[in-house]
Image (cartoon, rainbow, N blue to C red; front, side, top):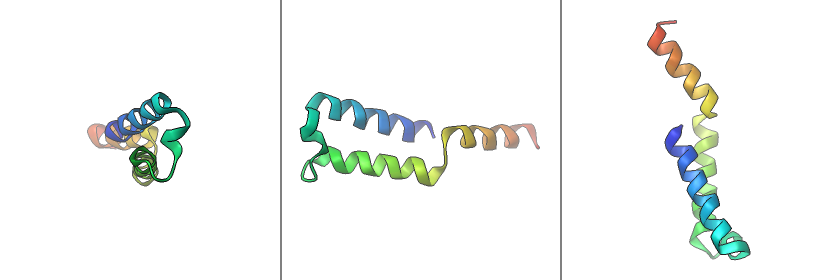
Length: 60
């Protein structure tokens, strides 16, 4: 969850630097942002991940 969140943050920050050019389909950052978002969606939200980890640690 942390890695997915940091990947998304890095993508958003990078696109902010480039402005509108970062959203263009032919720019590699656009693909990186899509991939980072997919990882967040597939893994579940950070809150759900934390809940799963807490349950496993507490034996619930």
